[in-house]
Image 1 (tube, rainbow, N blue to C red):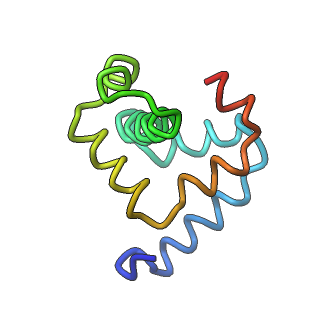
Image 2: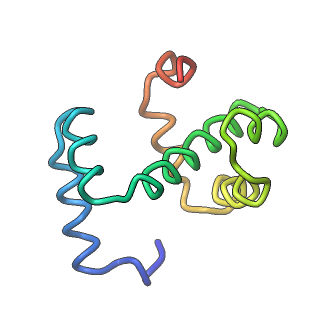
Length: 101
């Protein structure tokens, strides 16, 4: 874990996120906390990670998500050398739900 982000404020934010109970509450909270562009960037990175795990090509991912090759490469680096956060979430979500996205 990156010690630079481990702060009391980040702990409080994560506690708030963990208190959310459903997608509607997530929409309400994140629309207040993030700008539209921040939220779209986060969701784009997640979609890129999902598609990389499905072995999609950079070209397919760029066409589907609008992500730049730099963003795709950065997400790929996180998947291969990061803290396994994406994979942890992918393992917990039902496979059907991932495939429907």
